[in-house]
Length: 153
Ligand code: DCM
Picture 1 (cartoon, helix red, strand yellow):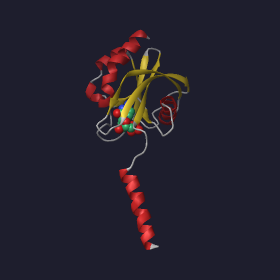
Picture 2 (cartoon, helix red, strand yellow):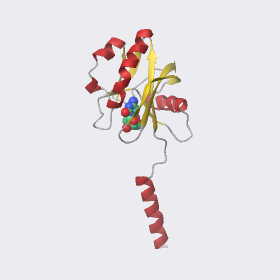
Picture 3 (tube, helix red, strand yellow):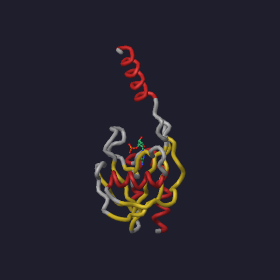
Picture 4 (cartoon, helix red, strand yellow):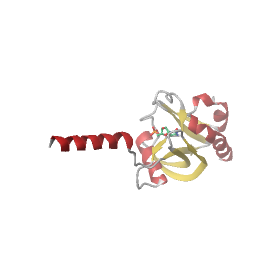
């Protein structure tokens, strides 16, 4: 019995540390409203804290990107959105995660910083004036396309 306990403990520890069967996809929402896009200021981890991002998070097993986007925005901002077209190209992080940005339209509720330090609505000019050091690295490539979207809006 002691041996069996040890085996189970070893296997579950390995499972937690070495195996991550979750999808590698991360979805991020470009919520556009009245000619502005909503950026969220990360609270963690320390190397990203204080930097602006498109809010979102990891896709769960069996979940579509659109469903993950709606769930993440509900969890992080307390608002209901509808997912739209892709923004820019997917970005692969050094850790293997692949980030996908999508346009999103507000359906209900007022976004609130439930998990972020702050939320702010940016016009295209605000984005052009934004210091890229203040943007999460993975999200920097999306800024030009966001400016185009806002200029067209
Ligand atoms: N991430 C990112 N840019 C975003 C959203 C997420 O670089 N707009 C990264 C940060 C994490 C991972 O994706 O490495 C998971 O995000 P979160 O911690 O928000 O769940």
